[in-house]
Length: 148
Image (tube, rainbow, N blue to C red; front, side, top):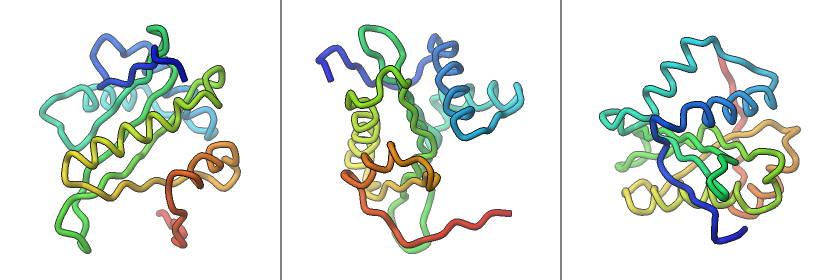
């Protein structure tokens, strides 16, 4: 990755780029959300009063190429909060360049500076390309997710 990669907090002026990236992320998982969810999610992510729901965008030469969303929450087995890395996406043109790793390391850095050392996430079994990265920078757990 070149020195021109910038990872920074999401801003109001990033809405169009964020929407394009998040739509692509949702489509990758064969999913979608209604317009009111787009609007409310973006509003939450840029609201400085909502410190538990966060986002960063990756820019390469000023072009948006990736995003990450994370959520702080309490944990009954720990005193400190933990971070759930909910969404991570790199534009296909940027994959293999280190942007995914840089976005995860950004969240790790946030965690390390905020007394929230635990960062966790999930992915689908078929996401083999991303899992190659995840296997290098995190530990796979034995948990199986259930959902209602």
